[in-house]
Amino acid sequence: MKAGRPSRDSWDGAPARSQPRIGVVRYDGLIALPCLPFPTPEMTMPPRHFLDLLDWDAQRLNALFDRASQLKADQHPQRQPLPLAGRVLGLVFEKPSLRTRVSFQAAIAQLGGSSIYLSGAESGMGTRETVADFARVISQYVDALVLRTFQHRLVEEFAAVARCPVINGLSDYYHPCQAVSDFFTLRERFGALAGLTLLFLGDGNNMARSLAIGCALLGLTFLHSGPARYGFDDEFLNLFAQRFPHLPAPKIAPLAESLPRADAVYTDVWTSMGQEAEHQVRLKAFAPFQLNAKSAARMKPEAVVLHCLPAHRGEEITGDVLEGPRSLVFAQAGNRLHVQKALLLELCDHGV
Image (cartoon, rainbow, N blue to C red; front, top):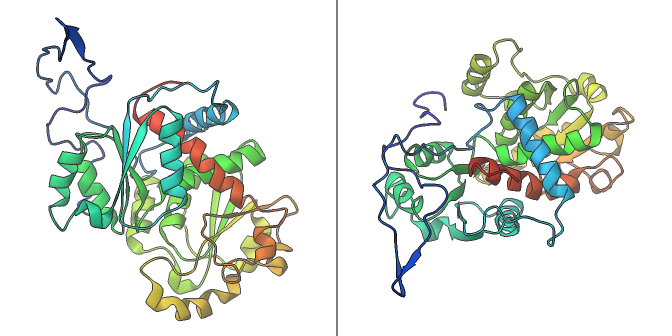
């Protein structure tokens, strides 16, 4: 991802959508648009995107969490403001989704806006027309857009020319929306994040990468346990070292040493979408890292269990642990709504 990575602020020079939208006016009983000068780069700003956590810092993340807490505490429909009334959120998903799709659609609706959903087949992005052409067009129709795609390169290519904020709803390399909701959930439970230790059980996948970056930003210790061959790729380790030169590289650590140290133990499916051919090999390799009653008994008394869902019960986690008193799994899922509402407001530059 490092090589050829576009700047988060890259922009093709086309005018970004002005905020707020220009309203219509009545003139002699007719509807007419007011005549305004064509926007110039000096009059507009390029859109801000949320592609990963690398450009964020602890102050900005904690401000996002503060806003999410406020939105969560004041979610009664009769008390809720509608700061995004009239705004449209686009969702273009190459992969199926439950939490990401529904939480974003509910979020924009509760903030007063609406949403448009396109599957990968419907969009034709990268097949019927180029990613750049598709991005230049659709980003003129919507006020923000969530992409859920197989290749992170596509997310970056799209954002490089988009005229509206682009949110990475999941790619093969990062899952930042899930990660920020996870850290928000931990902050709710522990009160403060700095000084906590998070252990991730599994391979060095998109979820693990986003959590490792988030831990580095927020002052948590990140531990990773799994089969030696399933650690982070060299490209990510180099990127991590460049962004956080003061921290050690996140390497695989023995489970026996890591489990008793963790304040939160996070697990994920062993076989992600696109890896189905490896399923039986992965089942055998990851079996010693299952989160079950025996391994949970070795955790700190106050430690919690996290999972991004969907869970394969009986594989990476057993049902009794998923449903047990340590589990924050379903709180994590619920918090996607509140954190993503805060994120939409952040990217659309609105206060609450």
